[in-house]
Image (cartoon, rainbow, N blue to C red; front, side, top):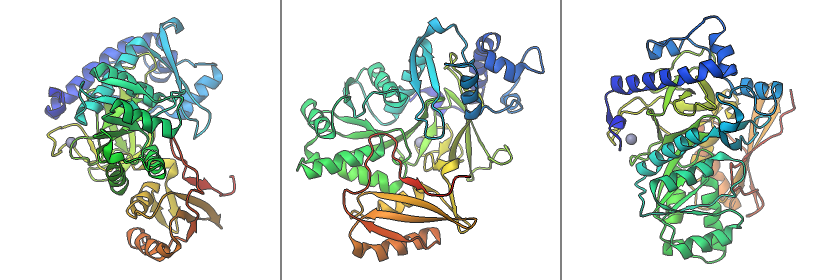
Length: 423
Ligand SMILES: [Zn+2]
């Protein structure tokens, strides 16, 4: 653990301010997007404190998407000439047009360093063999995980171009000790192993690290992965447009923000004002090392709980208990009750009989309604209904469906089917 991770808050904030000042000196003279955005009303920008940062406008995904639409193909959020960039990745495009994001060698090295923090917090060392069960397409998550594992000095094994069974056999053959994939896919691999009578307890995997979607911080989902893989399961939070910002510690209670490399704010999405410790709000991040395509005061759309700065692991980096609770635009309001899809996962994954599920969202009048389709024995339905009622104070209709009938996912799972009329 680096000294900064356990440092006093004043030291952490002084470090962040110094890093940001260096970055702005590079960004503002050359990056047209941020120069227009942050220098429009002033000649120069000097930040005396982090409080000064909070007076500057937020950046939204919509602005970055519009910037690329107006200035194709890469937009104007580029600090350097195009010849300085070495990598292109894309967002998934689940909430609109995909963003094309470029990295320089320097910012790609920064990504790798951020992932080293994720691995080290999970106890992974250079003696490990890290298997990345991922197709190596334009999604940045596992490419950066791969670079991080290399930088750590571990043996890295890419699992691209293989089906699930081939990946399982490869992991067994090379003696992989760390599995990196989405939480949904870790469960899918375990399902395939069961179908083929492959005994995961005979594998060497001791740690699993999950990215791409919330899950490893949902207690019942984490336990299900740990039991299936006979391993310790850690969460990671990151975004293509931001970086690898969150990591789980040994407490396994959500994630810490890597405040050595990011400045975090948690705001009320309606007012933009900070929320108090214990409250839920939208995470706003500023990255401190990706100067080629920076994201400053970026509204992530991720809902998180402000867990303050004290953790059993000794770190004073901001805690987000429960990790990313969901996307602000995924939260459903059903008969006046706020329902996070992660809360449904936490209940359903407590039942070993439940294989897969899907949330169907419909509208009746002005109210949203949800129905669950669950792969489970029909006799389980009354208990599931009761558990959901106790946890959410809501009666949710549940329809049992055949095992294997719902979609499975390698990357971000899409378990919400929105059947509401388009506005
Ligand atoms: Zn901790």
